Image (tube, rainbow, N blue to C red; front, side, top):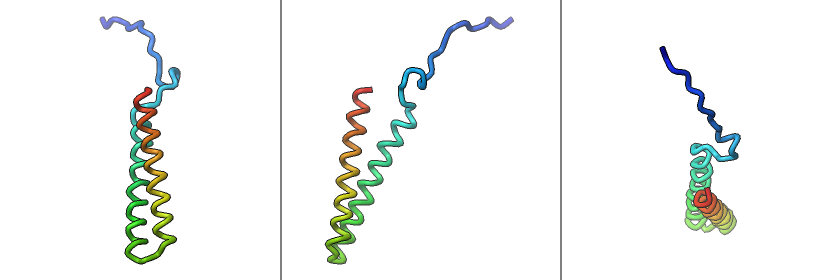
Length: 77
């Protein structure tokens, strides 16, 4: 006969811990934003379009800030 397992389990939801897939998702989104911003910035430079270049730079910088924030949260958890 199989022995019944009486151990109690605590879920990540109960502890407030983010699931590993959720932790990775934030880093991936930040990195994608950084890459897209870099690409837009380069296109703006190639087209000599200061507005496109500026928006690309802003997006890249936002992605870099988010990536750094994700890293800080990852090292705390």
